[in-house]
Length: 229
Image (tube, rainbow, N blue to C red; front, top):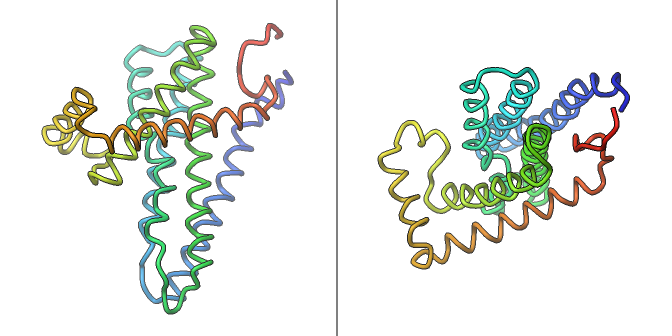
């Protein structure tokens, strides 16, 4: 691997996501001006939440590489895992597509598609960072097991957000109400077929999308052990 390329990757990533987020912001701002309302403004908040796992994953990988304290590693990992579902969650915002008198249907479709695509890339980037750190510390198998668990938990998180209207902050603000509902669905999955369906469909879909992106990446970029230095 070219050390110089490795050093410039964080900068390239910031530029890439800066452009994507700026494009989403521009589309949203134009819609505000054109429509005279703040409808679809929730996309800005959803994109902010989608960026949290990407930031947390970067700090987790950095803590793992530096050999930081266990508390720091666990802290960043928990933040990453709790907020990860927010990244792919935006793909469910297509339910808000309706005909508007001053906004063409195709425009809102482009707005949500851009936001959902950006959210997915933020999520996949964060998973790749954590997987690389775990692979380096343990093994390739453990890294992929983590990926499978993460995407399935993301599918479950999408269900909690879209159908039960919970969000990541509720793990702190309303744990006494949130966790019993989670426990009930984990203990009695057959009593909640919709939970199982949404979790599996979105989890498998996210996994296949992640594998597809990884397949097209060079091995040196994936951060896997190649045996070379």
